[in-house]
Structure formats: structure tokens, C-alpha cells
Length: 279
Image (cartoon, rainbow, N blue to C red; front, side, top):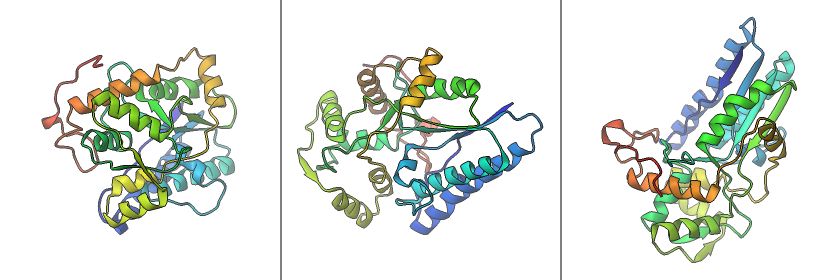
């Protein structure tokens, strides 16, 4: 028996409430899942879905960022330590920013990558934050789902982790220009330092922007273990450029989840029917 744990919460309320709500789900929820898993008599492996943000706080040092990033990293640390202590076989999977299905673009996530697309389409991005090395690690949801379903079944090492990211993901400026060109709007030409963008986001109480800016890395991730595991099972990464275009088209077609619930998921009452293969 194997147990997959991938619940998380990105709260959108006040600062103190965000921290409490995020910690209750991201840390407390993971702790409870592990407690239950350890009671199972034939558990072979616990599969923990975390995020690439763990690279911002290696070891046991202070964790930078907003409520979501802090609590996700804390839950990953606690899970890893418990697995070592209890001898629990564990696969930790750190995906990039998840975009829509590579074939249809379909998604229910309108934060993260979706928020970036929304700002570009609605011309609410006057400048590109960060420097030339800042980038957005991306992964199509269908590739991630296949990786999650198949790779842990073949894992034999007691403790292993994977960064599931398409290493062809472009730097932020290139990504912004590609999206703007695809939807036919002018791309922002100005650049602003990341600390300036973060200050503006905090002052304007823009939670989505603050959390996104906290997750802009400059260093490339080590995807080699994940790529080897995927190759051994015949998993092939889809064309990322096409996947990005289809994800953008789907979100525009869906009006970015108009009528979305507070957790960022679209309200089914307002959702337009999905169209496959929008290009």
C-alpha cells in the first residue's frame, strides 16, 4: 500500500489569518496524514507532494516568504524528519508552477501562473520584476499527474526526492513576452528590482502577487533524478511552448475562473464548457 498526500491551502484573508489557515492545512494536515499512514499495517511508501520553494530554505535555516511558502516548506521538513526517525519510505515530489493540460490547456488553478497570465492579458503588469536570471519553473498538469501516479510505484530507495519541472522553462521576461505576443497585447518593457515589486505588493496588500514574487528563483533546479526516473518508465515531456499557449487560451476562454471561490477554484455555476485543443 502507498499513501499520496498533496493537500494544501493558499489563504487569501488577513495576514495573521493567512498564516493560521495555511499552517492548519499545510502543516497540521500533513502531520495528521502521516500519523494515519504510520498506523497502516502494510504501508510501503508515503508520497509527499511539496513544491520547488524548498530550494529557498535548505537545511533547518529560517524560511523566507509568505504564509503559503513558509508552511509548505515547514511541512516538507517535518515529513522528512519523521520519515527518517520512523524508517518510513518516502518519496518527496517538488513540482514547478503547474500549468494546464498540455493537450487541452484545461486547469482549475487560476493563481500562480494563472495570475501572471491574467495581469498580462488585462494589461495590469506595467513592469517585469526581477533580473535576467529570474525564471518560472513550469510543469503541465497532465505530465505531473502521470509522474505522481507511476514513478513512486517504482521507487526502491527509502528516501528520495524529485524536482518535477520542465528544464526548458524560460526566464520570466521571455515568458511574459511570449504570453503577451500570443494574446496580442503589448509586453511591458520596463524592469524593476524584485525588492521594489515585493514592497509594492505588500503596500497594496496584493496577496497573490506577494506569494508569486516569493517563488521566483534564479538558480536552475536539479531535475536529473526526476528525468531519469521518468525516462525509465517511458514518460515523455510534452512540448512546453505549445502547452503554455494552450493553458493561456483555456484561461482566457474561461475568463480566468469568473465567479471563482475564495480558494481560487472556479465556481462551476459560472464555468464555461471546456474546449479541447484550443490553440
